[in-house]
Image (cartoon, rainbow, N blue to C red):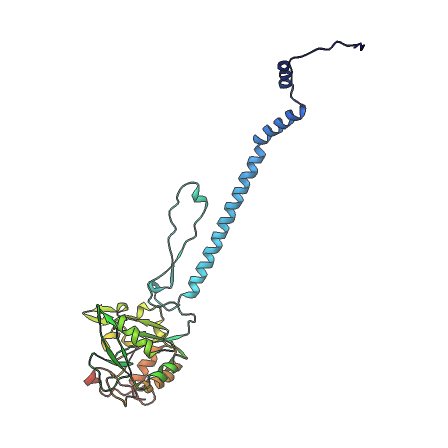
Length: 318
C-alpha cells in the first residue's frame, strides 16, 4: 500500500486552460513586444523614405545625362549650313505633369525628324546628284512598239495595265557606274511610282542609285511639277540637279545642269560630257559656283550655250 505525503489535487480541463491563457510563456511575450516595436519604429520609416529619395535622384540624374547626349547627337547630325527650319532634329516640348506622385518621375523629351524627303547623310562632305528619268536617262513610248527599245515595263496605272517600251540613253551604264563612286545618286522624277519604279529596276540592277523620288515628292506650281531641293535635307552647296525640263528646277536654278532631251538618237553623247563635267567640278567646294563658272565660260571648252534659244536648255560642250 502506497502512502502519499502530499494530497493530490484534481483540476478540471476548464481550469487548466484558464491558467494557461492568463500566464503565457515569457518567450511569447517578448516576441509580441518586439513585433510591436518594429511596426512603430520611426527609424525604419525614415530609412524607407531615404531609399525612395535616392531612387528618384538617380532617375533625375540619368534624365539630365540623356538630354545632354541627345542634344550633342542632334548638333552633330545637323548640317551647319542648312536653314534653321530644316534642321535634322528638334526637341519636343516636355509633356505636362500628370499628378503629384508621377511628377517625381521625369519623362525624357523625344527627338523628331523635320520633314526631309531623304534620310541624313553619314558624311557631311558627300555631294549629291539628282537625276531626272524620262528624256534625261531614258525615252519611253507607250503601247505602240518603236523601232528601237531596250526593255518593256507593264505598270498598272489607274486600274489599267499599259506597255511602255523603254530606250536607254547611250552611255547610261558607264555613267551611273562612275558617278556613284564619288557622289550620292538620287533619281528624282515627276513620273508616277507605278511606272518609274519598274523602269529603275531594269535600268539599275546593281543598285547604284541610292534613293528614288517620284511625282508625290514634287510640288505643283501653276500646274507644273517642280522639284524643290530645299526639302531634301541636303546642303544646297553640295547639290546638283540634271534635268531636261527647266520647270523642274525653277526654285533652285543655280543648282541646275541642263541637258538636251533624249528621244531616239543613237549617237547621243550627253552622258559622256556630264561625266567630264563632274570630274572638272570636284575642285570647287560649292557646286553652285562650279555650275556658274562653267556655264559662264570658266570650264574647259568654254561651256557652250548653243541651241539654248531654240530648245530652252544649255547643252554641255566639254
